[in-house]
Image (cartoon, rainbow, N blue to C red; front, side):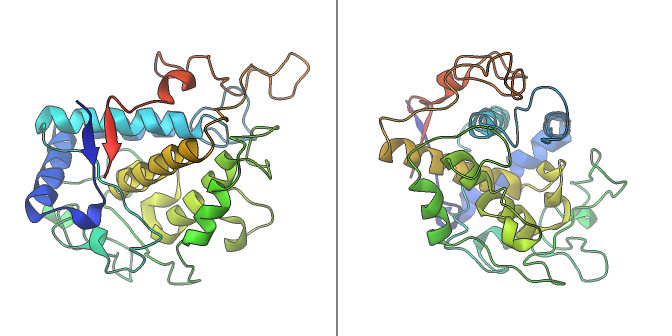
Amino acid sequence: MAYVRKDVSTLTRGERRRFVNALLEVKRRGEYDEFVRTHLAFYTPDGATGLRTAHMSPSFLPWHRRFVLELERALRRVDSSVTVPYWDWTRDRTTTSVPWKKDLLGGNGRRSDRQVMTGPFAYSAGLWAIKEGVTDGEFLTRDLGRSAAPIQLPTRKDLKWALDDPVYDVWPWDSTATDGFRNKLEGWGRGSGSASWHNHNRVHRWVGGVMLGGASVNDPVFWLHHAFLDLQWLRWQRAHRAHRYLPAEPPGDADDQHGRVVARHQKLPPWDVTPDQLEDVSRIYRYA
């Protein structure tokens, strides 16, 4: 029977506690840092050579669907009642919204060094030292809203802009694609600065701190954010039933994207699974 992923704002105190405790236990066992290493290893930008799977490619959504599912399985090995909640950032939009409560993810970073000082994931609590990252920092950092140059979280209108596009993705299947649901949701835009960050990317920028790079998994909000994105893929699928993951076939030998993107029936590293096999998860979980 499929289990349920809930809006984080609807979790009871007991559900919050069990979710946090399961995360801390996965971290204590050393499993959590492996998730950070995996994301770092597959965070391949357009400019790099070789296959892109996690970002700037059509497989952004199935890759993260499987990634969140792997974390959820680790949590459920600790406590079978736990599922990954989602954060609806079109509704819970302030620095004091539910995700940032002391009994859940803790709050903003302090002004001097952006170190998170409250909640169970604060370095001072002794249970969440960062061991894998792009810097030598050992503590969780956040800059909610980006204090130096404030930005706002994406709106419902921003999300609708992505959901209304009936085509999953378009050539050249990367961060420069101007049409297609995938990149409108992932959020790589033209130009520079805040105007070029949409939906997924803008949320990472809004949270700031360790959420800004390939080691963004070090902030547990990463999972709540990507569960919400996964929900948007489900909503897109329901709204556009005649459309599926693209490309259906691998780009040809003469195509610049040959060998650089995963087609519908190709294996999605590092797992032995295809995007096609990840399009329907209704037997595994559903969203409340």
